[in-house]
Every structure is written in C-alpha cells, then in structure tokens.
Image (cartoon, rainbow, N blue to C red; front, top):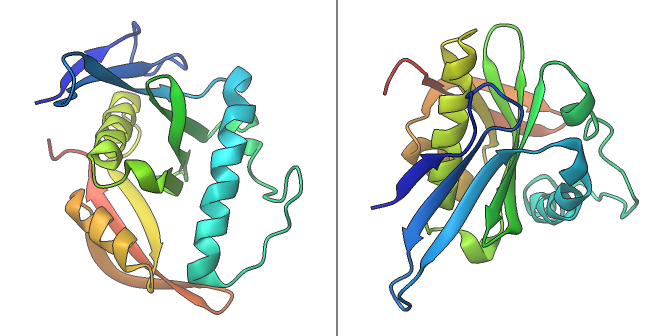
Length: 189
C-alpha cells in the first residue's frame, strides 16, 4: 500500500507536492514518486515529455507536429496564465509524466495528461489523478474535474473511466476528430 506524505505546508501552495513511497519488491528499499506543481524552473524538464506525448498523440489524431523548440502555442500559459496549473511527475527524481490543468470558470479541466509508456500500468497515473483531485478540492472553486479523450484512444478511455471519470454522453469535435467528454465529481471521496 502506498504511503502518502504531503511535503509542503498548504495544498494550494505553488510548491505543493506529494512524495509517494512504494515498496519495490525486488529490492529492500523504497521507490519515490513525487508529484509537484511544476515551478517555472522546471519548465524545460517538462518540454521533452510534452514532445513525447505529442508524438504518441499523432497515432490518434494524425496531426504532424513540427519538431521545433515550441510548437504548442499554449504550453507557456501553464506557467504564466492565472487559471493554468502544470503538474510534473517524478520517479526517483526523474521526470516521467505530467498533467496540464486549467480552471475554465465553471469546472477544472485536464487539458493534457501523459505518463511515459515504461511507467504505465503501475499506478502512477491513478496517483496523479488523485493528487490533481485533491489539489482542485483544496482550491474549492468548482465541484467538477473534466477530461476530454479522443474517441479512438481506447487505452485512454479505459484509464479515465477506471479513475472514476464518467462519460457525460457529450461529444465535441476538434477539426475532424471527435472527443468524449468525461468528468468526475470532486465531492466524491
């Protein structure tokens, strides 16, 4: 069973993080998973992960993204915008994933979410979702956390549904792609 430790004073602090201690069964020591609200100083650590994510997303949306220093115009908003929050996932102090979230004014929304393939199906994603839910609850502005998923991304659909998100039945369209709208109630513990 993971042991969670909050490592900063206030949940809504930009320095908020959790250190998650997981038993590593092949060794006698513990492995540390840390989830942090990524400060500006870690901005460049997140960018290579974001490029990996975009490359993987190409399999679902067919979009060819240029390999430039910045090809996602909103990426920097997660550090400069008032309603945006970047979370960084570290495994043994190495970046292995992220969650980019925003406050839309009526709900919180996960815009982008990624865990490196090597670290999937090990509970990392669920820990990140739980962390983000707790973070949103601590802010207290909304009772809903939403995430949109490509209809053809079956692994992502299974993940979000397993993380207690429900299909709202609504579908949106971005260019020629359909998205499933999912959400979870933050009041549910």
